[in-house]
Image (cartoon, rainbow, N blue to C red; front, top):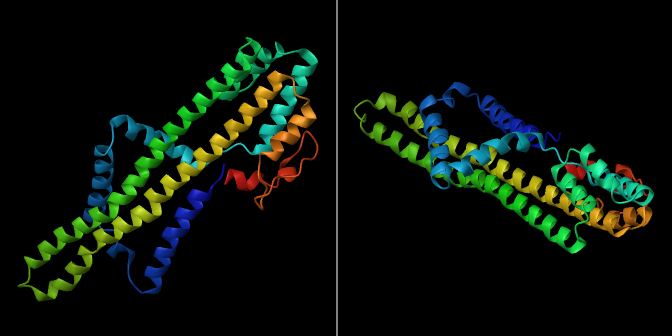
Length: 273
């Protein structure tokens, strides 16, 4: 689990609370139900209206993934592929069927099953590339949904402020009440900006980043299993896969032992972020 999103959102709202406290204001002045209902309710509603119900459900289902941010580090993927290469050289490609039953990753499971079934290498590459492209398109739907809500929320907040100011103008005969009423009117704009920049846009960006990391992982697996099918030597295969993964400085990681660890890549934590 990578808690970057949870930590970031908590710190962002914490900074707002700290500012309110340092200014001597009261949080109750910001936690007004009416503007919050308008901003959050209308933002979600127009988000649904901008796509399909299926897009909305896909975005909702992606929320746990966005918060957990679990991505398998490249070092673990490479170790697994090298182990499969060693198994294939010692027991033959038919042993991949047994390996397919033991793995949990659906993408790797299908790839190994196709190898055991004798699928042609070129056909297998096309099949895996199509699956990667489909996964990427599906992930973009959820990311686009949250990013769209991040665009709508500030404008909806302004709408709420305009509605509240209209009510203020109806009560000009009570000048003693104008100050609190005007202050309350701008709470809708505040929540529009906060929800967009503290929630919706970060969630959209997070899902895009997780999708990029997942596609990189799947490409690494694809090249690995195709090399296993072609009978590549395990140590050289490990070095080749490590060369495909940039290190912390953006340079190719040094190829070390065929069963390299996260330290070999210098990437475990960074890629999971």
